Amino acid sequence: MRKSLVLLFLITFSLNAQIFRSTTKVGTTAAQFLKIGSSARAISMGSAGVAVQGDVHSLFWNPSLIVSNNSTGSSAFTHAEWIADVNYDYAASILNLENFGLIGFSFTSLTTPEDIVRTENYPLGDGRKWNAKSLAMSLSYARLLTGSFAIGGSLKYVQEGIWNERATGFAFDVGTIYTTEWNGLRIGSSISNFGTKLKLEGSDLTFSNEPGNITNQGPQNVTSNYQTDAFDMPLLFRVGFAVDYLSFENLNATLALDAIHPNDNNEYVNIGTEISYDKMFFGRVGYKSLFLDESEESLTWGVGINYPLSGAIYITLDYAFADFGKLKNVHYVTITTTY
Image (cartoon, rainbow, N blue to C red; front, side, top):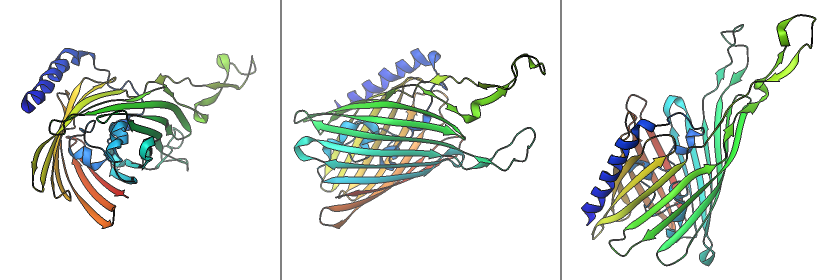
């Protein structure tokens, strides 16, 4: 049954990728940073995280997963030096309200290095500097509706900026998780980044115009603005499963598979596995963007260690490597505290 389930997912989305690959809409959405994974653990498993038993980072993949957190709370921070020297940071916290569910907060930041402003009159720089920044903040809530079914959601504020221009918007995430009695099989689904469009606005789009360009005739120095288009956010629909396929004394293993339907590309599959010893040492491997044509993302792997500090306080350190093909490979580091 286990092999049949995996095979069914792979065949279904392989066929979908072939049918719809001619309708790809790459490059048609804004806020691409919202697609970057938030935790080294899930990234090292090929970014298959929609049904993996939750920690604080589940706010990104599927907010309903945080109901599996039995501690008082948890906080985490992830850093990655991403492609082209771009810095990616993610911070999140969750708090267990017992019978009232769980609440969470997350902050995401993507920044480019500063560079000098070049113009046609000052090709070597005019003394000013610019950079690009993107950020998102979310407030989340999740709770169990039955002993085996949970739902969660997030309200998200999103901002993108380049120099003096800004684009702001709001988005929602919603997710569900169902846990079966068969080997802890979990079936999850989520919708991410359903929200408003983003449109850049700012002082650099304002300029003086002389209609007709005839001196001393008609209006002079009319204030005008360049018009920018509004773009959708990268909407993602995820569905997948996670199953504990090995449990032998202190050795445990989990298999996870996500099928993703984005609004700006073809469908693809993420798959990964995690092996743990004594719930302290972890090894992970995965493959991202399976069946996606011309994707530079592929193999991922990582390791982790979970160490008890005192009492119920634990600290977890995770590392992930992501192969980006012709581009720079990316390394992720995540620190998580549970209390």
